[in-house]
Structures are given as C-alpha cells and as structure tokens.
Figure: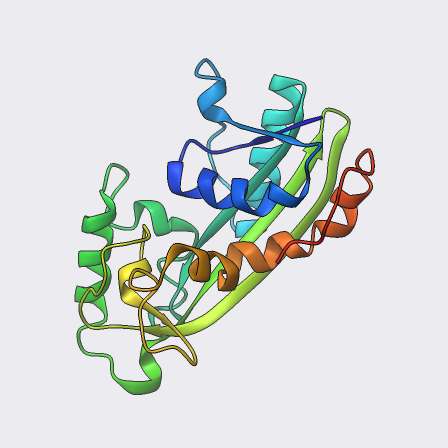
Length: 205
C-alpha cells in the first residue's frame, strides 16, 4: 500500500522515510510526487489542528492514505512563540536563517531557565474515509545564544536537548532522528500502522 507524506520539505521527507523502513509493504510517497496538489491554508490554532487539517485535506484530494505533521519550537518565556508560526516567525516569506535571527534577538535578554524550550510535533494519519489517528509528542531542551552546527534544519542549530551538550545541528542525523519529537510521535502510530495489511517485519529502532 501507499502512504503520502503531506510535505515537500526534503529534510522532513527523509526523516519519515527512515522511520518507515521497517514497514516493508508500505511505499512512502510525498507531495513532491503530486506537484499539482495545493495544500490548504494552515489556519488551526494548535499543532494538532493543523496536522489533522493537512492530513484530511490531502487524503480527500489525492484519494490516498496520508500522514501529515505539524511541528515547531515553543519558548514559554516568549509566551509560546514561535509555536505554530515557527516556519513563518520572521514573516510569511522568511527564510529559516531569518527565523533563527529573530529568535536570537527576541531572547537576547533571557538567561538560565528563561531559555528553556521544547520542540512539539503532532502527526495525523488519514485515509480517504477520514481521520484514523492523531498523536503528539515533544522533546525538552534550551536555546543557545548563537547558532552551532551545520546539519539539520529549522531551529536545530539553536536547540540543545536536555542531557546533551550539542545542538540538534551538531549531532549526526541518525541520532537526531532517533531522539527527535517527530520520531517520538511516530512511535505512537506504530500500533495502527502494524494493522495495515500486516506488513511490519520488525519494530522501529
């Protein structure tokens, strides 16, 4: 069977493809396979609402099973910002570098515990018949006062997970994917994925 990742982000697609490796009977596609598809406006007020919106819309239009996620960085000291606006924190057409620059500036006067933050991810799974499941997970850490590392994407170069001494952009991709908020949320979907044509050969690691 096929499942479409409702994203055109190459980093995110690769991360999900790695998670699906154990599911040998599932062919993983993405929105890159459907260039004519136009995603809906993300007007939800939470990560969960946006994930469900994207999954249900794509599954109806494409007539396929769809997995969609919505995720972002939350800084409690900034009243939850960037939050659901993480991708467009510095403006609708802002680059990832511009978003990071704004975050550094907004947190310039914050110290210690005030620099606590977490990545949150909601993943929704839908079929043409409707929503099947939506799960949410997070990973706790803190924000650096300057970027470190060149791997990863988004805010990875500014985020250090608790109990780690390197940013998400400094650790290798395999380790980052294993401890990420996205992977933790995906693990919650494994029970339902196991039921899809019984094609799971081994648990994900």
